[in-house]
Amino acid sequence: MDNKFYLTTTLPYVNDKPHIGFALEITQADVVARYHQLLGEEIFFNFGTDEHGLKIYQKALEENKDPKKYCDEYAVKFDALKRALNLSYNNFIRTTDEHHLKAAQEFWKRCEKNGDVYLKNYKAKYCVGCEMEKTDSELVSGHCPIHPNKELEIIEEENYFFRFSKYQKPLLDLYTKHPEFVIPNYRLEEIKKFVASGLQDFSVSRLKKKMPWGIDVPGDPNHVMYVWFDALVNYVSAIGWPEDENIFKGWWPVVQFAGKDNLRPQSAMWQAMLMSAGLPSSKQIFIHGFITANGQKMSKSLGNVIDPLELASKYGTDAVRYFLLAKLHPYDDSDFTISRFEEAYNADLANGLGNLVSRVAKLAEKADFESGIREQELWGEVNDDLNIFRFDLALESLWQKIKEVNGEIDKAEPWKLEEVPLQEFLGKVTPKIQDIAFNLQPFLPETAQKILDQFSGKIVSSPPLFPRL
Picture 1 (cartoon, rainbow, N blue to C red):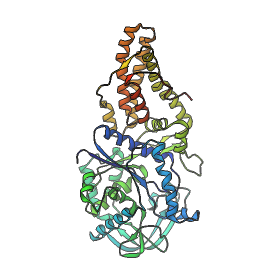
Picture 2 (tube, helix red, strand yellow):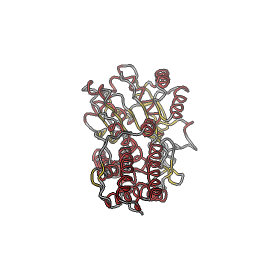
Picture 3 (cartoon, rainbow, N blue to C red):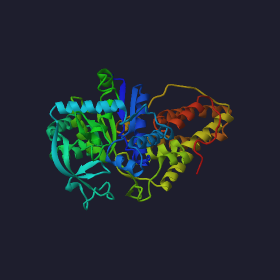
Picture 4 (cartoon, rainbow, N blue to C red):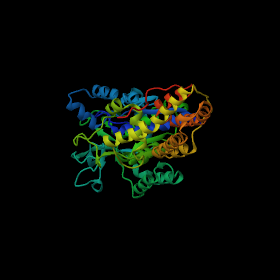
């Protein structure tokens, strides 16, 4: 069990095609999965699509489609990220999967049996964009700050509620016992403050006659489950719960990846639900920032959305992965512009890594040099940075090594050396390139493998890894 590592992203809604913000989350998760694989661990990497709720129901109606058929079309588009971004996830779950439906209903029954699900009449302001109720204190000028262009809906009906208020102390105890439960730390402090201020029970169902697109509430055909309750259960249903407790226990707990807008649902609501169902908490939750464009949140209405599939098709998979990982801060919001992207591509990939590999390979081919294969390991700084999800710092240390080796070449001027000194120089520099490539594997897997293959045995030159733009 100690040799197993389970991680999951959030499940994106299928109300639109994939965007660069989610490409960031899934790429970050992929790096961590590949890193733990290099450490010799068995990996379960979960990804998929969130397919219920009002937002998706409304989109299906707009397009005059059956909701399930609508979801089928968009699920394929999200699964296409696997090839476009060279992702290693080995499980793609859909919340419309039959197994997931049964798991969500069993989870509901366990919470209900524990006295944490009850009926009541209520009135609330609801943001369809977030699929969450909003209090007046959360609103800005009467609108959700995350979806300011959407009008809030007023819900007034009888719903089932989850007894969230019961879990204030257990949640605070969880955060105290596990100070690295949420990374970065200031997000942990944020959720602790929220929980300490008092918890309100939240709605976990919708009237079926108003919104039929959801999982039926067990024992009550008039209600369907609220989308958050249903979707979060995927983290346990993906690993065999509840049918096979042994498989579940073999993988659980999970490391979760989520954006800052998911802090409350993932680190508080979901953890309380797990406690209610009699299951252990998650292992850790990494909260990443958003991608902005010229300081503005990306949105279709502003016309500043970046399509990761198109970006990868034009510039290459590893070029996209590099920018997302190296040039965007993992914890905070960061700006994405094509000019910044191309500048980083030319400076770091074409002139940095690409130039280093090209010039050494040409020298080695000219000298008929053969490189040996040796044991390699991940550098300490890469381990340290990845353990706190600082992808940017890990790559910064790698590029510092690249800069140092390029500097050694400039100083030595090996193209002026005779055969024996050149062979000696190549014998010193090629292992450094191999080490760089080995440590580059979680981040730029395709590029790293090309370098490792090229520098194993007789080295010959090849087309540039990253042609200048």
